[in-house]
Image 1 (cartoon, one colour):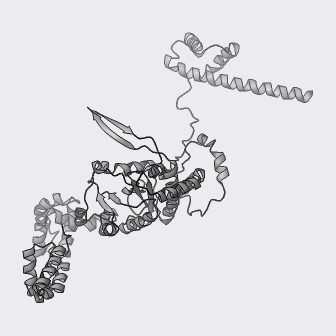
Image 2 (cartoon, rainbow, N blue to C red; image 1 turned 180 degrees about the horizontal axis):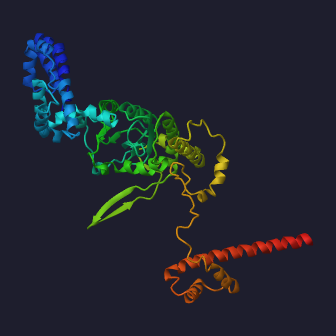
Image 3 (tube, rainbow, N blue to C red; image 1 turned 180 degrees about the vertical axis):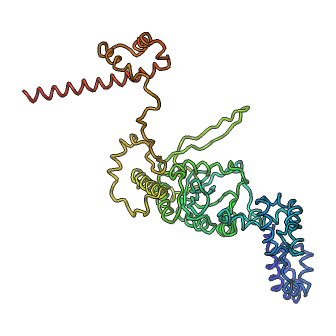
Length: 506
C-alpha cells in the first residue's frame, strides 16, 4: 500500500509534474503516470484526469482555508457554562446546555450573541471536551504528553506474544519505566529498557525527559555499543515510540518496527519482566528528577549492563504445554546473556572472541561496588540529602570486599530500597499484671531456679483466686526468661571479676 501524503504535498506534485505530463509524449506520460500513482495512491484513471486538468493547480492555490466554526467567543462561553455546571464532562454537559443556557439567561447571568448561542447549543460532546482541554490541563497542572498519531500507528504492524519465534539476536522489545514516585505530575527521569528475545541481553538508557527525539538518540547510541545488530524494535503504543522520527529512523536503518496491542502487557512479557528484575531492582520506586539524577542513573546503568549481561544468569522458557486447566512450563538451564550469545550460531566468530575478551577483563566486585555507590547517590538525590554528584569514589574496593562478609547483618544493602528503621518500642501499652507480686515470684525463683513458669503461675492463681486469668501465663513466662538471662549474665560477670581479683592478688 502506498504511503499516504497530505493534500498540500499532492498539490505541489501537480504543480511540479502536471505541466510536464501534458507536454510530454505518450511513453514519457506513462512513466510520469506510474510514478505519480505510486506516490499518491490514486486510482490510475483518477490520476489521468487530475494530471490532464490544467486548472487543478490554480484551484489548489486559490482554495481558501477552512473557517473555524467554534471561535474564541464560543470557547469562552463554553468555559462559563462548564463552570456553572460544576465542571461536568462533555457527555453530561451536552444535554444540560438546553436547560442551563435559558436558565442563566432568564436570571440575567448570561447574554450570548445569537450566532455564538447557536454554535454553543449545536456543539457535540466531543467538541465541548476539545474546547475545554486547555482549561482542564491548566487547572490540574498537567503537561501535555505525546500521543501516538493515528496515521503513524496504523502504519506500524502489530506483533503479539505468540509471534516471537526469532532465533537470531537483535530483535528487541522496548519499554519506558517512569521514575515519578507517587506523583506523576511535573518532569522526572525515565529509563528506556530494551531486551533481546533470543539471548535476554538487556540494555538500559537514562532519559531526563520523555521525548521521541531522545529515543532516536538512544537507539543510535545502542547500535554502536551492543554486540549484535539491531534488527527489530517492538514497543507499546506510547507517543514517545509511535511517531514519525522513530518510524523514519527504523526505516532508514532497516529495523523492523512493530508494536504491541493496546492494554495487552503480555505482548511485551520479556521486557516487562526485565523492568522488574533489572530496573526496579536497581533503582527502586522513588522519584528522580533533574539532570543530576539522570547522570547518576546513566553511571549506574553503565556498570549494571556489564554486571547483568555477564554475571547474572537467567531462565529462558523452552516450551509451554497446557494439560487441562494446568500449564506446564519447561525452562532451559540458567545462563547469562553473554553465554547465550556465545552459543548462538548467528553470532560471528569475531564477535564471540570480543565477548570472551570483555568477559575475561571484567571484575564483578568492581562493578558491584560501582552499582552500590550509585544506588547510594540516587537514594540521596531522591531524599534531598545529596545535592551534587560525586565524580569518582577512589580506590575503595578493598573496603567493599571486606564488608561483604558482614553485609547481611545490616539488612538491606541497596540504598534505593532501604527504608527508615522503626523506633524500638520501650514502653508498655498495658499495666503490668505482675507488678505487685513480682518480688514474691523472684523469691520463689531464687529458692528454686528450676521451677517452670506454669507451676509458678498456678501457685499465684491458688494464692490470689480470680486475680490472674489463663491468658496471662505467656506474660509470666517471658518475665521469667528475662530474669534467668539477667541472672546468668550476673553470674558470668561475677565469676570473671573474681578471677581478675585473684590474679591481681597473686
